[in-house]
Image (cartoon, rainbow, N blue to C red):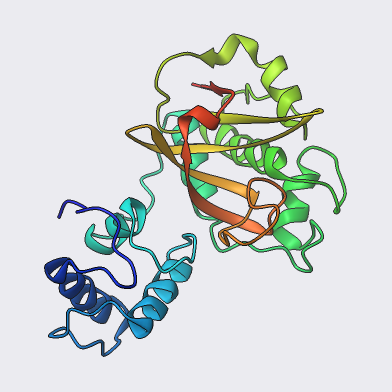
Amino acid sequence: MICPGVIKKGSTDAVSVKAIKVRLNDLLGTTLDVHNANFGDSTEKVVKDFQKKSQLIQDGVIGELTWERLFTVAEQSTVESKTLRLRALEIAKTQLHVRELTNKNDGKEVEAYLKSVNLPKGYPWCQSFMYWAFQKAASELKVTNPMPKTAGVLDCYYKAKNYRVSGLPQQGDQFIMDFGKGTGHTGFVVEVKGNSIVTCEGNTSADPTYAGEDREGNGVFMRLRGISSIKGFIRFV
């Protein structure tokens, strides 16, 4: 099914609202009234529950990403790609359940990401997460990991200049964001959707009210980001 546009509380698209309710009931075992075309508080709450389960931003709004998760058959089990960047992405996606222990850049998994670049807990870890995933993929495939061993997003970007690519990104590419004063954020490209990319990234947030939602969030989430917000892309083949 093609997304008809943004559907949210108060929407008057009766056909879409009913279809959403049917699908939510099927997936979550809820009892939304599928004969009622009203998108009210109860529907919004169930949508947020679905978004939380699907590692999406929990705003109760059915946009392209939530619609796709609702009406697309669940992905098959990990394919175990033989291409380094695709295998690294597959490994990264197995971490979507990860959350910091105390919201201070800590916890068993987070500390493992940081350890891969020789850092203890307490440091920002989006780039460490990338290196950890690529290192595991490279070890599995028995190849050299081309990603610079660094916890710095912009440091990685500058050191990996020979791997930078122009034009539209591809699945498994690394995106780089630059917030100035040496700060940045990074993650994987999962899919290109028009002028946006679906991402898988660490040290981010799925909560749009979180002050640091673009960087230094508390877990591994999938996001939807505008390509115009990205400084550049790196392709480690």
